[in-house]
Amino acid sequence: MKKVKAETADELRPGYNRSDFGELVRGKYADRIKEESNVVLLEPEIAQAFPNDEAVNKALHYLLEVAEASTRLTGKGARLNSGKGQAQLSPYSPDEFISA
Image 1 (cartoon, rainbow, N blue to C red):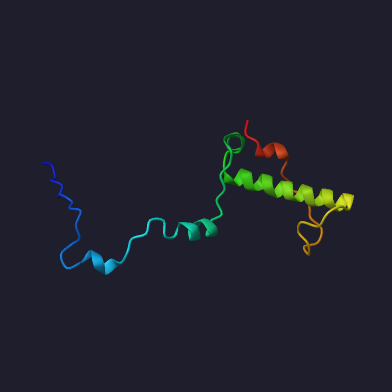
Image 2 (image 1 turned 180 degrees about the vertical axis):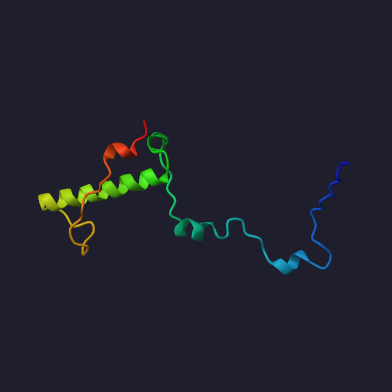
């Protein structure tokens, strides 16, 4: 036996008035969410190189460590992680981040 779907009306339930809710604003919180989120959009060819978010994070950590070590060796530029002491290079190889 099939269940009969109740018709959904595009009206408020009795006892509620639309005027009680104030003006509707589309995207009212969009800017706040955009500022608070930490989501980035990768270009398609970059996204294909990494299987998941963990691989992207490992690669970026490795890149920061290499940049800091390189900066420290050449004596040019400011330290990336000032106040944290000497950085140790990551145990991950760059090949680990790129999918075949």
